[in-house]
Length: 253
Image (cartoon, rainbow, N blue to C red; front, side, top):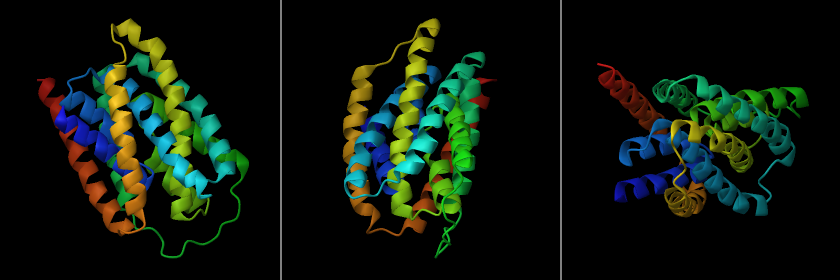
């Protein structure tokens, strides 16, 4: 359990530092360190990351580092997309979800490793319908594989929306919270069919430890080089993604 709690701290640290990566760490921790079933882990990850992200967004909001237009236009349609993704997940096995999850990790590594422009050009306000479409697409992915989608939200807000990095991180945390809770609500109705239920004691402990990590990450964010952190995290994602694929292939034989 101590390793799992260290994982929870890293989940929060990642969210506080980069506004992403929390769910990508949560599912493997729950599956491989606590031995939970994939579908149960995905459901709990949505609750855990949603809680950490919501509490982690508060300091950003108090400092005026949340873009409410993007949060609403991206986040609210994203909740519908997440609900749809969670509904679609009942048509595939937990193993298929984990393999899809590994693929998403490798995609995330690509986004994390990409160098951010030194001086992003101001692009003006992104059209509302494009933000809504982004939200629905990322939301569907969130619900299907239990990821918050921050690794897609942050680049979208920075590269497409023209937001500064710190503003994108604060906005991403609020969007992640909205979408995660929507997906969790749907999973509450799906888990009983598999004879599974949410372990609220574990989820609550992860939220508590993860929130401490998130606050720490937020304080460190201004002192550590973002590009070095992102590349290191990208390498970790590749390692974890390959590990999950290898585990599934080994179990299939």
